[in-house]
Length: 332
Ligand code: AKB
Image 1 (tube, rainbow, N blue to C red):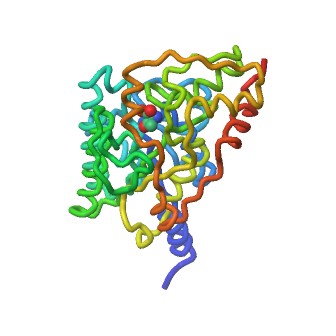
Image 2 (image 1 turned 180 degrees about the horizontal axis):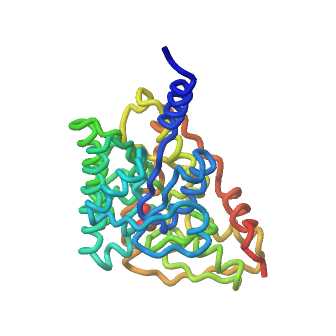
Image 3 (image 1 turned 90 degrees about the horizontal axis):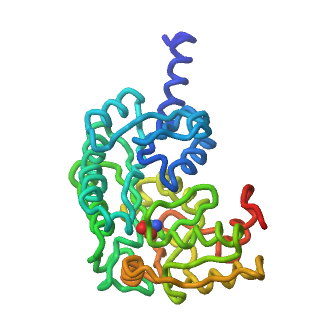
């Protein structure tokens, strides 16, 4: 016979089992804080733990649980997962494309060895694991306009190589050990209140800050360099949607997602509509340009749209209006 206490216990444990306990690694990069805020609105503040090896600024520390966690230390990672009863892990630690070329050995450690630790811990403890991949996982021999989900992937950056490795290892662990691995290939992500660190698409974030502060921007890519891009709100929503998608709806484990595709010249023209005196000049960085020239100009995300209903909200005009009107972005 079930007593009221038993019933209360079972109803509590049912709710808890339903509710993921979430860990975000690399939490102080461009996307971690935004993702934590987004997931906390959905699952509650204390269900989402942000982690990094750096000390967080006060406002992030006071916004919800934050812990030190080093993905290169698998014992530390395991303790974090066990002690906090983690069930979903979002693995954001990575060196991006341009900084990766500047420090290949650190990129190998973080992007490859770190991933191995994460895969093992996630498998041991039955976690659902999200790992972001990127347009950078394609290379000069891939179809570039558009790049489909399945095609030749021979990237020429350590970042791209490590992301192809992550896609393949995650899918291998899924087939071999049943790890619930889910992966999206992100375009360049544009956000107002966080800065990217060392990528090739960074210009598309910096341009807004310079446009409102000084009315000028020196771009490190050629005016005609076309790359797929997405506003952060779409990116975070896509990430949660693929994590919540019923297993049976996923015909694969790594999906392209896209929203828009533009060149620096087209972005500048759109900003110009809001800030008529805005001027862009070009001073091409050869490393970043070579990387961008090897990446897709357009991304085919039809499988994500078909399988789990992906749909972007932000196109180029909406992106520019939203960025320039973001609280804290002061017009001159
Ligand atoms: C980079 O530019 O390296 C990243 C990316 C597109 O993955 N923003």
